[in-house]
Length: 211
Length: 211
DNA sequence: TAGATTGTTAATCGATTAACAATC
DNA sequence: TAGATTGTTAATCGATTAACAATC
Image (cartoon, rainbow over all chains, first blue to last red; front, side, top):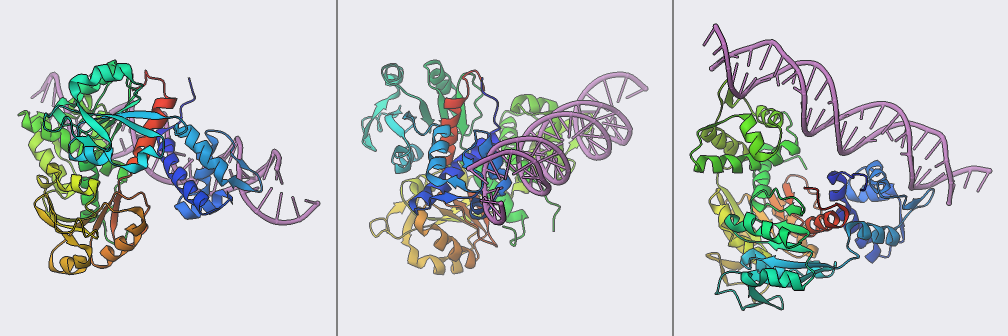
């Protein structure tokens, strides 16, 4: 039972992680919250508050060691563990995600791809053969699967999400425009249409001098 | 100079829009904030507050007319206008988006696809021929383009985003893991890696009985 | 009219920012 | 030691929820 950290903080962690990774690549050894705040266009106060939810990673009078902080945030996010993933629905978007190289390098391992369309089953995508969804339960029982990526049409989503949860999947990365309210599983929705509509609002309602 | 409405509210509008669209399809004529709040798992108070940022769409003692509210939210979001889009970067993700049917039906019209890879230029994707990025400026001068979808590698993103802004593009839908700070253009970032990392945090740090 | 439900003000809650003592 | 910068508390700000008068 951990003390509850707000999702607002959690959603900022990957961004810190990205900036620290870039600094690390540039060979920067230390950074102060002030310097990082200039880079990221947030307040130094927010950076310090956010980090102190998880412990004191800095040193007074010095700042933060870039590599140490990078690794610690990685640990907080669970990137030091291997996260095995399966993909359900090998349509256009599913195939694009299966070929996305940035995931594997962060420890996200795609180990299975499933579809129900006979024309797609058997194809090789991202080095994996697309299997029939009928084999899903068996596959999950025989492999350690943490996350399922759902790139299937809206209609089938709730049913398969429920099954996956019952079979022990811990996280669903859901690209269907459906709100899943399922206990015992963590869900992250990516709703591309909603994102695009938000952009439409902005271009029609904000004057162009805003950032 | 409109009174400023917070992004928290704006980001909820597409979700209201989706639920109202579904109710409309089911033939539901009226709904109260209480009923809608049950459906959407938010408070009725929030729904009424959100809507009243834009005007009084309901009627005391009755509730809201579903079709009217649906259309009004659509107008607020700018979905009653045609939003012409071009896509820059016809890799896996770009191709998937080009084939995404949900956009066109909301008035988002893809009218051009660009890439710099000679192997991709000339291909037909989603009914459009992929053009050389060299033709981008000319194309924008000759067509009314509102939004550019950026599905290109991180390195080239800032440069092309700046050019697009100078050429008069109003909105950038950015899929590169880069933060663009450019004036005179509205930017909506979609960062898939960040989303996935957030899910990783949740499966490793939240106990499974949480929603 | 009586009942229902909005629109809107007031209260609460949570998140962000500011300030500064602690300390390297 | 003096200067710098964190960790952390206090103040502010904004967003959410509750309450209720207005009104259909």
